[in-house]
Structure formats: structure tokens, C-alpha cells
Length: 438
Image 1: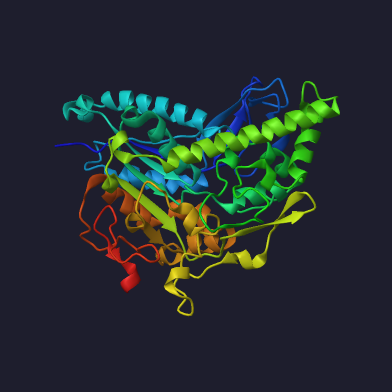
Image 2: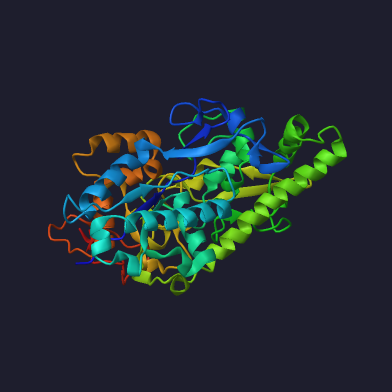
């Protein structure tokens, strides 16, 4: 009897602990409660290391509050027999770094998981080692890490099936707000000037910049993409110059600081743009996958920023954050169905969650109403912390992922979803009840 592939769960941005291993007794510098922005901030002369040296900051475990229930449910329900467990590994990573570095680390972890799984007697007996693969679950930015790894490494990544939850394949405006103001629906920390400074020096955050059509309103005299530094307001560069003055090795020369700040900002945006192009060009067969191997879950029916206006102020750009750019027209009978896409999960707008390597007909939309009556605490948390961050706790999604990975039928009718706005011929990767028709 075939065995289920082992599973790796890849969390979103800010959702892995960071610890400094330089002290003899390692110290947590980033966790659910405690966040030390100064020690987490990166060095302007080498973004792989910290501004405050000596240090050795490494990733720790994933956030229990967001992923413990998901991991434990998969471990329990994927196994056919209690004595023959299916490994489900959390993959904590340094979410500050360029995603290419994280993808390479994930590829190495895939190899490790496969080698460890080969040592399990029931996997050995089932012949798992003949063609070993892993199944991958990615939440939020974790989905981008998975897609990026597959785009760069193809079948070497040995992916069997993939499930992504609320992943901003085309970006989120919350990343722009985080860089600009330090306030956003990314992570769980309160806004602060320290957070804003750290965010501007976090390469991974720029990988979440939105690129979907019709989301950006920019004067014709400015570049039409947020991957161009000229569309960002000057305060970003000014703060980078100040940061270089305080932490850079050659921070005393104003002209040198300005040049380094411009180069640093452009480099981070260019790397993010290149990554987005790779994701857009991902060809699933090159990674050994078919369309039905990818379960793409999109959160909707929450008020979300769906547009961003940029205005010209003198010779420079300035962001105009408008309250009416936050919308939720999902299922609004007063709005044409063509506008039902003006929605999201509170952090990622619907259009930002649509990958170019899948058809819209393949997407599975879920709403906060999909929490069961026994999940009252999660409903309450959704109202306080947002649908996006707590979405992995949804019990129905746990069942959905198990069905996707195992091919089991829905004997009890307890998995469902909804088609994306405007889709008439829904084609999810597994048989699902269409909740939209209820």
C-alpha cells in the first residue's frame, strides 16, 4: 500500500522565531511577544548580517499560535494507522532575507526530510525510496518561497503536491504601508518608528510589493510599477541615508551615503522584481506537477486595501493612502459581479492572491464564515487580528489539505469552497461542494 508523502509547512513573513546564537545562552530576539528591532535590523553594507555586531541571528521554530493546530491536524489525519505516522515538518526560516536564500534553504530541507523519511520502517517497506517526494504547504509568503523554489529548481525540488493559503503571488499593499509608515496588517506587532526603520532594511518585504493590473493609480509622468524607486516617496531614501550614517562602515560622507542608499534601495527592488517575474513564468510541468497538484486557497470577504494612489508632489512621488481604497464587495448584491474581486483576506487583496501559473477557475475561495460553530475563538481572533494571519487555523482547511494530499473522497460532506469572482466553470483540484450555491 502506498504511503503519503512527508509534508513541509512553510510559514509567512515574521512568523518564525529569530534567536541570537552569539551569546553562550542563545537569546530570542523575535517572537510572538518580544521583538527586538535593533538586534533584528540588517547591516547596510551586507544585508545577510546584522547591523549590531557581533551577533549570529538564526531562525528558530514557527509560531505556534498560527501553525500548531495545522501541523498537529495534518499529523493526525494523514496517517492511515497511528503506528505508521506521516511526518509533517515545520520549516522555520530567516524571513528577513532575500527569498532566493530561503528557497535554497528549503531545497536543502527537502533533501533532509526525504532522507529522514527513508529511515522510517513503514516507508522503507512501502518502497518510498524508489521515487521520494514531499508535499508542501505554504501560508502567505511561504507560498512564494515554495513557488520560487520550484521555478528555480524544477523537479530537483521533488514536490509531490502543493497547498498554498492566502499567498500574495501578485503582492499586497500592506508591504508598501509597512515600509512607508511602519503600520500594516503584516505580522502582529504594534507600529513604531523602530519597526519602520527595520522594515525598510528587510529585503524580503519588497518581494511582497503588488504588481497586479489596475491596483496602482500613478500619474503618467511617473513609472507605472512599484519596483521602480522613482515611484516611492523621498522619505524612504532619506531614512536609508540616515541609517547608513548610523550603521554603515563609510557613513561620514553625505555624497557617499546618498549613493549607497540609492544603490541599496534599487538593488532590493530589482531583486524582488526578478523574483516576481520568475513566479509569473513558473511552468508546473517543469517542476513535475500538473494543475490538479496545486491547491490554491484564497481568503475573501474581508475589508482589504485593493488600490493605492500615488500623486506627484513637486518632482517627487507621494503615496496617498485613502480609506476608500479599502473595500469588500464580495457577494455585494448592489455591485456588479465583475467588482466582487474588490475584496481580500484583510491583508492580501484578491487580485494579489491570483498566481499567473494557475487559471482563476482553479482557485478555491474561503471566507471567515467557513469557521465552524466550535471555532468561536478563531472567529473572535479574526475580528481582532485579521483573517489572513489566522486562516491556517481553520479546521475545514485542514480537512481540505488532507483530501488534496491523499485523494480521499469527501464522505461526510465537510469540505467546500467557492469559485473566484467571474468564474462560471469552476475547476478546483479536487471535488468540492460549491458553497456559493447555498
